[in-house]
Image 1: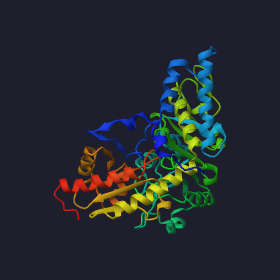
Image 2: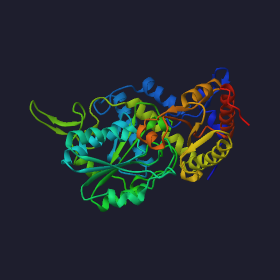
Image 3: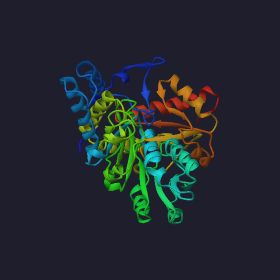
Image 4: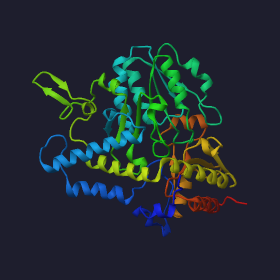
Length: 413
């Protein structure tokens, strides 16, 4: 396995050449969205420059080329997540829409009052709010796997939480706050033993490590392109084809139909049954280019690079006075991010000062308010790194944190 050459990778990203407040940009907000390499930007522009046309509907050359490129992108996604059947790959706007599709179209029609849906306390709002809505409409009950003080799921509670009333389980593969990587294979096995289906939110893992959704035991997965070098506005729902075939479409319109009469309609085959209207063709094609780029590096190499950055970042930040870090201590048990707090500076103020030094981090509740309550904090600052980051970026973060304390008059020794 060849290690990632960060200097070579950085040269592929035009935005990394810019400055912020007169300082070189140190981009450490990759868990929110990643930057885009020239190959992805060119793929998006190339679609509009050379083959802009609607897909699946025309017989002219542009329509044929656009359709072929769009479906090639679907095949790339299927290969990337473990060589699954491409018929199970549905393009959505984002992971949030993918989860909502499953909640509304597959799960809700199968629920009765008192049925249970099992989630966790570390979920992103995108994997909480859709289920809250479903529970309100159906009378289903939401249950949650709690956290340990170390920031891991308390799986000792799993046998009591998975009951004969459990109909569906939906869990995050890795926390966007704690960086904890959850043992989803074990959770899926336990869910299936109870006759429940499971959705796994892989938005925080698909960009960072090899993913095999069949090996996970997933019935459905959801993720977004923009967190893995692709454009915003395109995401993926993968579902086992037999489950998608048994699911009614959530949206109706063009393309998702086989035949329409004035008072009746029949549906297209999967996955097109779930892609009503004109799809986001250009962004899907550019997503395919992002997958090509990641595969050229090798996802094992991406993972090893981030473990090394984890190790360096944890060592660097733990040594700073007043800084506390959330999540597991072991670098290999984390994705490439670290959430932290300064005992005397609010995270929003901290992020504002870091920005003055050109260091871009996230601050807030990270769309995980229940998790913030469990941690006993209103918010955290979060630095998240990726293939174009190196130890020098962590050094810049640490330096800016020291300067922030000086700015607020907090002594740093």
